[in-house]
Amino acid sequence: MANGDAKRGVLLDALGTLVELEPPAPFLVAELAQRWGVEISVAEAEAALATEIGYYKAHHLEGRDEASLAELRQRCAGVLHGALPTVVRERVDRDELAPALLASLRFRAYSDVPAWLAVLRAAGLKLAVVSNWDVSLGEVLEVVGIADLLDCVVTSAAVGAAKPDPAPFERALECLGLGPEEVVHLGDSPGLDLPGAAAAGIEAVLISRRAGS
Image (cartoon, rainbow, N blue to C red; front, side, top):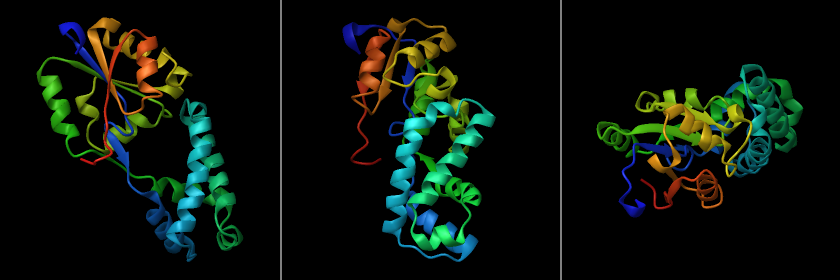
């Protein structure tokens, strides 16, 4: 860390740093076959999911509470429905697709993360997640088994601003009760994590998971 500064906390990105999304296309293929007896290829599912994910990224700030998140998920399912092959659109009602979509989106913590977080906590550091995500992130972190290792979770949707805006970082500092010089941020996006942390006066370190873990 720069200048030998003593840090008291660590801010962490979620997707690509702590957790990964399992390839959702095979799960969606299986959900469509099981629920409605509709068969499509993995490639067709991948193309449709890419459209849905693009829509979600552009609108994730709208998932700011339980009601708005449910509405956003229905819209995402509608986008997915429109991008799927005709055989799906003819046999599956768009309003019924959301559960299949959600069942296809499965996250897992990187294998080194639980031990890594435990070491940081044992060193007396406070830990906060700062992520461009809707308000369901806390539930995701519980499912993957790392929520109890974190002091707070800050989502862009709850703040109303997405990285690289400094607002999510500033909210995390408030949550931890620390100043920007007392923390370091770890994230995988050079275009979101690095400039966002810098704008909040926080030192940042780029994490690369491309080689897997």
